[in-house]
Amino acid sequence: MNVVTKLILIACILCITFVAGYLAGSNTKLTSILSIIKPENAETTKTLYTSSNALTAAQTTSKPVEQKELELDTPSGTDTTTLNNTEIIVDNGDIIALFNNFVTYSTSNSDYKEYGKKIDDIRNILVSSGSELALILEYFDQVPIHSQASYMLVSIIMGLPQELSKPAMQRVMENALLKADPANLTTFLELVARTGIKSSSITVSLKDIAIFSGKDDEALRALDMLMPYELSNAENQQVTERLKAAIDSSEKADSPYYFSQLLRFSNSTQREQLALDIFNATDANNSMQSIIMDSIQAGTLDRSPALKDALFNIAKQEQSELQQQAIYTLLYRFDLSQDEYNDISRGQNLNIENIRF
Image 1 (cartoon, rainbow, N blue to C red):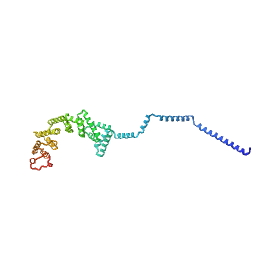
Image 2 (tube, rainbow, N blue to C red):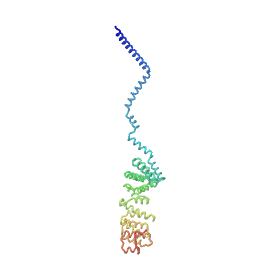
Image 3 (cartoon, one colour):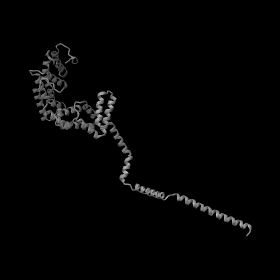
Image 4 (cartoon, one colour):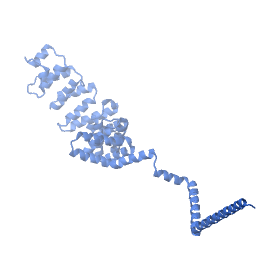
């Protein structure tokens, strides 16, 4: 074996020895690192891993109810809108409190712009919420009819769209009639007068009051809101008989009101006879005679020769309080001959515009 061969052999042996030493050192270091991990730490790691898998499985198999609860925590766009609307109502308070605050405001402030805004706010709530409208109508039943709040409620409700305002006011009127308190007839009549709302049921109620009410003033007011064509012949006869009885039994100061209605609910023939009876009465009632002249001027009482003669008789009476009105009625509604004109003018140049009565 020559020298070169020996050197190569020695080099190989050294390399093998170096590699074996390196591998032995690395294995010792790895064993040291692994020995640092305690058994309980390893168990904990195993437990955490197992728990993590269980949680994942539980979340994956959760019930629909739990999913619904999660959705409530994060409302959809629709839910958000509902919540926002609820907040607006809560901020304003209930409709009754809002209205009462408005009444209080109206008595102490003169800002008409703000006043109108508050009315619009209340109306907007009533239009958008049937329950709020029902609540305000229920409250209306408790409000005194001649109070400021009552007038404001009528104004607010009548300002709603007609498909809401008319049924709402009819409900209030009908509720008034359902109560046993006689004062509610007054409430009913007042509401009909304020709103002008009519229906078949309201008309029937008005006729019943006009015919059967024990109070003449209630009957008279009901007649104010009725038209003659709304009464049957039998009902008309009942009304006229009641009015005649009221005229005979009432004081002189009150009789003109009843007489005015009597003329309205009588036919043309009856009206003329009623007028002639008043003109020819021994105890003349100036108020009733004046009503007759007004009716002639309005065209609701037909002109006739008999009425013309009655008016001439008054026009010639210098001391009569109705002389000027009689002259005016003759000039305005009757065809006069020159002799008739001279008879009442007595040389004066009569001009309708200059007649005062």
